[in-house]
Length: 334
Ligand code: FE
Image (cartoon, rainbow, N blue to C red; front, top):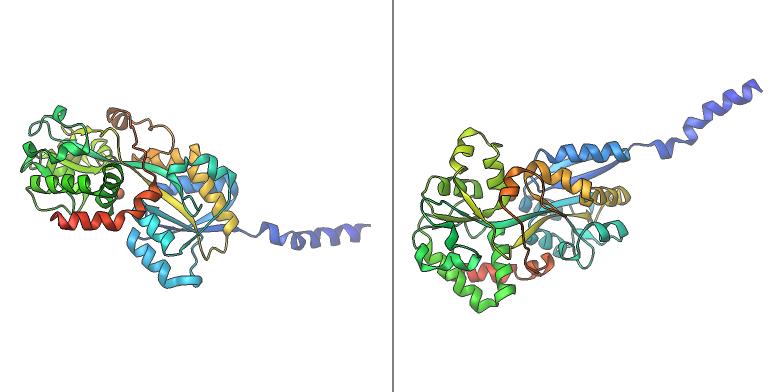
């Protein structure tokens, strides 16, 4: 009897090996926020699945995945902005997945109709104003940025950045190409400074009064105002007023299962977690993005007021990206 039990205990660990083998998910992320790691840690604690993170900026991530092809180690791909997400899907880098949880976590306009990607945080392309230069009450919507009264006072980021491309795509869908072209031309006429390389430098210029008005993603301003990038940025942004356009162009961060995923089940579980109310809140909190549902709790975001999204879906934006770039180039947006 004794020998029998001894044999059993010896055998048991081997028999159990396949199920106790460390599970993992490899995440290729085009997000550049260190704070995401805290949310991944919660996922690991909850599921026992280890997260291996590989970071690269949006475009190089897609290039890398294309190069790696079927040999890629990626299980999950994270990207920001409709343009990049749709491009990754069009390039065949993602596979459709069926998950009831994802359908209920993610409102339909923030996910791919073919189930290849799912949003998990939201961002607004918002208008920022220096009240010493321009009266914030004269600006309510994107259209107002083409008002000739703003000549020499508007600052814009370079054309090649996807954030503005997606905004222009959004306006083309809402107004039609002719009206959207007229709007872009009107804005370009109002630009005085050279086009900016990033949202952060543009925000500083607005704070310093070099620009009266600008277009930026809301979270950059919130982060600077909260002091996340230091006292000097906090000071220079303290005076800036964010005008929440009504309706607002809402963009997303999104996740999809890589075409070549070797850990598909774990990949789906990971995306279910980051798009869940809890996961979305964990990711969006420290970056000052908006979670998928509700508007976050920080005082900076509360000061921005409520968000009324327009009704354009993220997949529709992708389809208009090329047209948007042409409209911008034709108008002289550099
Ligand atoms: Fe960003």
